Image 1 (tube, rainbow, N blue to C red):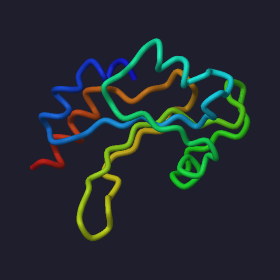
Image 2 (image 1 turned 30 degrees about the horizontal axis):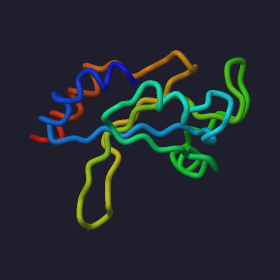
Image 3 (image 1 turned 120 degrees about the vertical axis):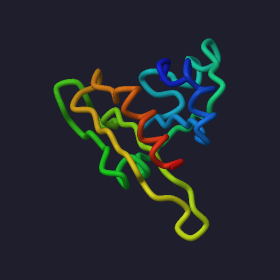
Length: 115
């Protein structure tokens, strides 16, 4: 989250908007509500409390050595359009909870959409 938030202006200049989604309940193990009170971010932050979005995108991680009923870390670039609401143009699904999308790769995907 930090790597993207720190480059928010660059991302917005590419015509994109950041949104973070956590597959967790507000008062879940990591207490995202309390965390965001102490560490506010300027981007949209959503909680997928019933894991519906996580499951719909194939990102649910039911059980693993580093996971229990959460999401694989993932980055999606979705191009909005008037007909379908949006098309996934890039997706990175992490293999474990520390595996994140390379920022430069995401920025490249954003630039390709604009062209």
